[in-house]
Length: 143
Image (cartoon, rainbow, N blue to C red; front, side, top):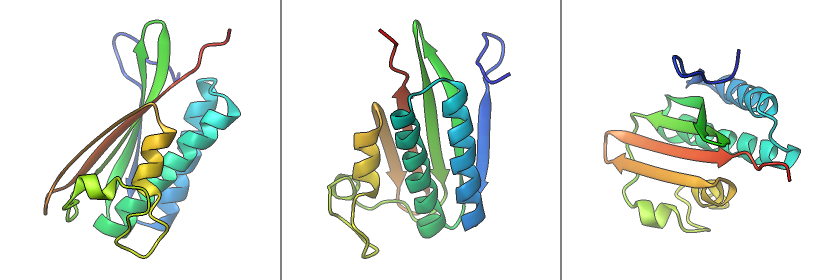
């Protein structure tokens, strides 16, 4: 069963060590969001978010984990994604969230893009102790 009950939370965790793990996290995110009945567009947002967060773990921290959890705020249901690593951390979070900012020569849309794709976004980082990012996508109710 994929839905959260009062007694037990449904969690999916993918350890990120290799590029194959990124693919696995994306696949599990697709399955979870599809089972929850998210629209195709929101599924794409969720999968993109998981891809960005897991790629950042792999690229900057070399290992960490992505956890997906079904959450409820009656009558709403959502998917909470947590990305945790024990890497070098982010020295300047505000700068890292600016569109176009990059430390790796990329497009600089990773974290700022994730923040735009999701409904809720929280980040904490301590230099040399890693990063913890939590995002939530709420399922839009059918009208």
